[in-house]
Amino acid sequence: MADPIVVTAYFVPVEGRHDQVVEALKPAIAAVHDEPGCILYAIHDAPDGSIVMLEKWESAELLDEHGEGKAVAELNRSLEGLLARPVAVTRLVPILAGTGHQGAL
Image (cartoon, one colour):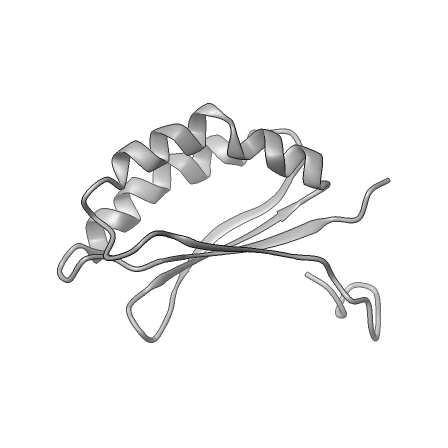
């Protein structure tokens, strides 16, 4: 089995558009939870007003398929005009340390 891939995505709403960004993200989250390989797909508020999405995928291949899928295309359309800058996406590979269930997402 391939190593899981963890992703962070930072969404910076245009001033006053935070709630609209959250509402745009919600349908995508529900759709992506049904996609093959999705282990985690969750959003969180950050202290600076941005919204951070944390993702975990079974493999890079399944993550790539997700990125080309309908849910992401629809999300991108629904976010038009709501973000102050492009979404910053980072792929992370765990460095296993400590106990298996505590040492990696």
